[in-house]
Image (tube, rainbow, N blue to C red):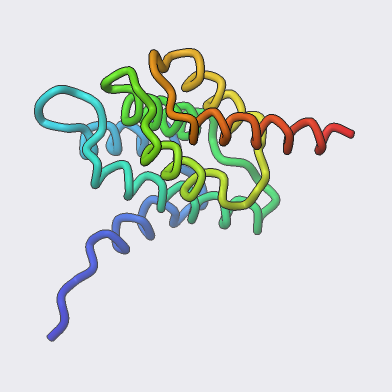
Length: 144
């Protein structure tokens, strides 16, 4: 007998109606936060990234967008996760590039998230500066 994949069960349940609403975001906030020190647990951040990717795919198939409440929670979680010490390290910049910007497209929400990180970070690795410049170039090119 194989084990139950609870991660998949949770993801499928959250995406069953194709929308992650305020009630579900409330459940996520409670389930994914760290017990000590606030913010989101690293494993919770991984789950949230995977959930957003799956929700985005589902929304695109239906020609819909993710809910504002979920996108706001996601962005706030990323900021808290990365800026907990005020610094964006090379590792964190690489994580952002691989996790959030893999599609080489920077939508308005992703750009706002990057701008927030850029403003709030007291110290930024050169890798983050490069990511920021690359994303800015992508956005400028898309506007033309």
